[in-house]
Image 1 (cartoon, rainbow, N blue to C red):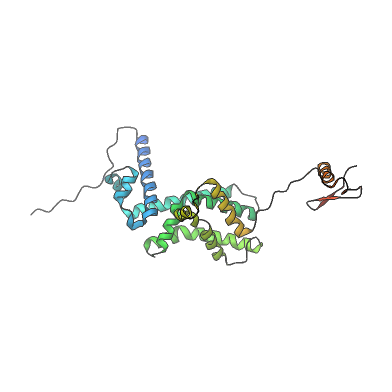
Image 2 (image 1 turned 30 degrees about the vertical axis):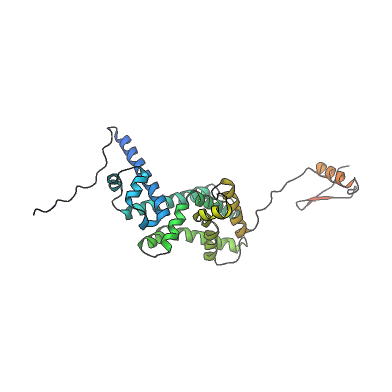
Length: 265
C-alpha cells in the first residue's frame, strides 16, 4: 500500500489582486483579528478550553488562514500575550514621559490611575495571568520571566522610594505590589460577580474613576484638596455677612494657607 503523502503546508488564502502594500495591510488586519479573538477566548476559556477552531470562527477567518499566520496554538498564545503586555508598557511609558519633572508622589498617583484604567480596558491580561498562576508550567514561566518580572521590579522600586519619603505605608514593597494588584485589576477580572452582587457596571467610566480613586486613596491616603484662594476683600465681606459684622475689627487678620491678610477698611 503506497504511503500517504503529507498534506501541503498552509498557505495564505487567495485575496484579490492589489499592490504589495494593500496585501500587507490586509494580512496585518487579519492577524489583528486573530490576536484579538485569541486574547478574548484564552481569557474566557483558558488555554486548554479555547480551540483554534473557535478562535478562527471568532476572528471570521478560516482555519487554514489562522495556521498560515500562527503555526501552533502555543505560538498564537504567546503572540496574544506579548501584544497586550506591549500595549500596557507603551501606555505606562507614555504616561511617564509626559510627567517628566513632576514630583514622585504625584507621578505615582497618575501612573497608578493609568494602570487601573488599562486593567479596566483590558481585563483579559489579568485573567490570563490568574489562570496560568494556578498551574505552574512553561506558559506560567514565560509570563512571569518575560513580562511580569520587569513590571514587578519597576513597581517595587517605586514603592521603596515612596516609602522612604513617607508617602506610602512602611510595608515590604513586594506586598504593596500585591495589594495594588489585588485591589486594582481584580474588580475587572471578577466583573460578572460584581454585576450580580451590586447590579452595577464595573466598566462604566464613573465606576472606573471611583475605583481608581479608592485604590490610590488606600495606598497614599486621600488626594489633597485643591487650594482655593479668595481675594481678601471678598473673604472679609463674606465673614461680616455671616457674623453680622461683629467678627472683624481693624486689628483682625484672616489667615489663608498659612499667611495673614489684614482687611482693608
